[in-house]
Image 1: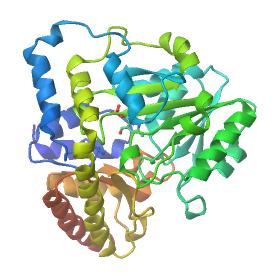
Image 2: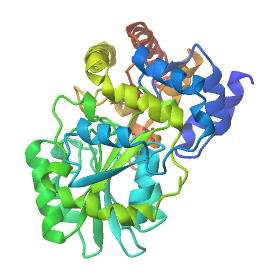
Image 3: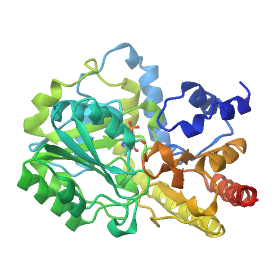
Image 4: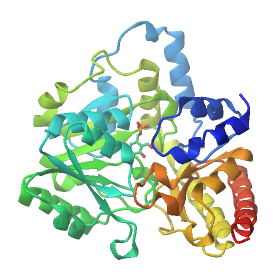
Length: 386
Ligand SMILES: Cc1ncc(COP(=O)(O)O)c(C=O)c1O
């Protein structure tokens, strides 16, 4: 497949439309620098790899695993979050994605509303629309620190509100909640007798992180992923943690009744068992990479990073004042084998203002991004001002 065909298809500008051919093409392009999906390319811990290989050599893949996940993995997830297994129960899923879907199916009926944010992870809105209604709140401004605040939630709550979605840290901006904000959300949930979806996919990248499950245990649906900090995105494994008394209704929403991929679970078990041996290295490199990106962005007049430092492994670069369109710089970088994401993937309202860049990748690759971003922006902005 030749590259320019994809540009003609305007694949990158199509927002949420799935484009399997595009992803198949870039996936197989080995030299592509992966800064478009917030995945982590820094953790190749041998213990994880060996656990997967052992599972293959033992032909474990011939058997179905238990439907809710290996007991050991379920326990390790709760331990990782320091949650008590009397109070909480969990399900091993094929990623945070499945956990999100099960949450919507369990909690939302047609009249029910969920409050989400824009920018945010639009797949949540998409799933929620299949069962209930979405109230999407614009948060792309300094006044609310680029996050859904307790005040904004109070302004948008109605008698139909059933669920509040908190992505923490937030994809795409990397904003994160303080302890007092999490407490305030817990109070709101209590007052209105509603639930809190806490998507903690990027939790381990944050400097400080507070779990809703600690402050509103009986109202929390916690979405957990092995894709980002553990670096296991391709294995498709995650978890959904719920108050123990909710497990019965969650069970009735399960789709993957024959369990989650055995190899993925073996890798996930090894990742959690040995987390203290690899996690600091991943966090340290990820943090340092941000600075390289910031320095590059600072070279471009009008470009800025709304939330810096980001508490996730991605950040937003706002370029709307430069005259360069997100699709133009994304396509320019793609020609140089660098994959980033246009704003339209994470925002219906503000997507034309920014690109999202993720950076849990080796330093040399971030340096290449920095160089090409600066040269690309300069070239494209001189063209747009002609
Ligand atoms: C906020 C958020 N939740 C969930 C997911 C899905 O994660 P998983 O790979 O575990 O399905 C993502 C993936 O990018 C995400 O950004």
